[in-house]
Structure formats: structure tokens, C-alpha cells
Image (cartoon, rainbow, N blue to C red; front, side, top):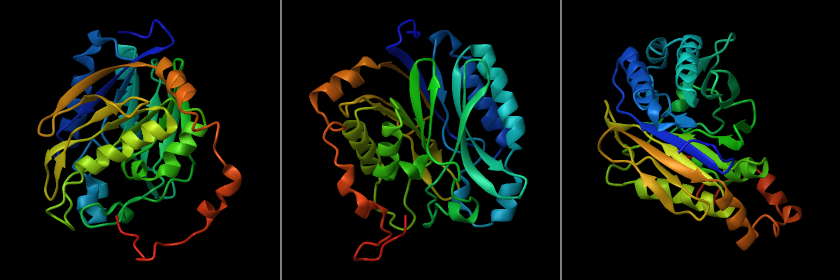
Length: 296
């Protein structure tokens, strides 16, 4: 289904197994998109930092950063893919700026390969196996919503998905589809704990409370320290899972969205109509829980 109607929007989630060779990962992502060009996709979404092994599981920051591909070259390559397929692409990448600072970033390219918007991940995890704080600065560009065709896309990256303030801010800025490229799997600090059900549930809740579509795209498979559990999925404005990918293998999942569902869902439960922003001042106070927890 292509977007002949403004209410119809097809997305594709490219769930990947990522090797230690950036060139192989980049080629695999490009193949996944070009091989399915006949599917008439409006927006392709790739996993967080897909061009390499997940960097947060290592603590040798200098060596690992040196292996990341130049982000300007990566953007140029996928601009050509976008133009070739006539589809928009959500492209995660490690962005090194002139000052030497590095950001965990996401570019949204339109159907002609132009970068419509870019987002720098604001919430940075710091727990065992997910030490992104050793590599990345917190994003400094705020929250980003941009259009692909007639659909407004809210940009987030992985750890952002656990914070209700992110989804609410994006929804208030007009987002109809929230996308979260992700890299999440086993928890080294608690090996017996399976976070996948909670990971999915927290985003389905965001879909309900904001009456938006939510798409999360994960990587899959064993890397050096972590087993990534895939399970990429899309939820509708009622929190129902429309499609879910395998938890054990690479897979591209195609999902047709009917944007008119947002209007229907919001007309039934008026969450936005009955908000009380005048009572939310305490959200701006910096405080910890009584347990003093801050770890991921």
C-alpha cells in the first residue's frame, strides 16, 4: 500500500544482526531496503547505531569510536538509496562534530534524499553493558518532529523511550508516529531479568496515553557481551501491536498505518482536552526517588 491517501502510510522496520565490520552492516541495510523497493514503503527505519556492534557494551571508548564510519559518508550513501527507492529513511548514526564531541544521532531523510531533520539522543544510559555515557554527549537540539509527506514523525532513540516526558512532548508538538531506533537486549547487571516485555509495554502505553502510533526497531542476535532480543514492533493509538518481528533472527516488517485512527482514538478518550498543565510544575523539579536510583 502506498500513500495515495493522506491517511495511508506504510513503514518498514529493518531488524538487523550487526557484525563487527561496518561495511557489512551498511551493505546489509542497503540490501534490505533496495530488495523490497516494490513494497512501496513510505518510511524505512533502521536500528540504533546499526553500522557496528553496539558500542555501549565496551569501555575502550577511544578504540571503538575509531571504528565508527564517517557519518558524512554514511549520510551520503543512504541519500542515494532514498532517491533510488523513492522512500524516506530514518538513519541512525554516530555524529562527531568539529569540537570532537560525539552524539548518538538520527537523521530523517525525505523521499528525495534530503535530510529533513536530525535529532541527537537526549537521554544517555550509563549502566553495565549500556555505557553510552563513555562515548556520547546528551543531545543539545531539543525534541524534533518533522513531516514525511502528510505524516508528522517524532524522533527518539532507544533509552528515550522509557521517559514519558519524551512521548508527551513529541505528541504535543504534533507527532502522529513516534519512532525509536533501539539497541536493547540482555541485562548484564541482572542476567536473569528479561526486559523485553517491559520494553514493549512502556511504548504501548505511550501509544495509548498520547493516541499516536509507535514504532521501535531493535537489533537481534548475540554480540560480544549482549544478546539482543529483536522483537521490533508497531503499536496503534489504542496500544495494540500491529506487527512484531522475531526475537531470534533478522527480519523486515512492513506495517500499514491508517492515520485517521488517531482522530478516532482522541475523539473517544480526550486525554489532551483534559490535561492540567497548571498542576505539572513539580515535573520541573530535580529530585531523585527515595531509593536514590539513577542507574539504567
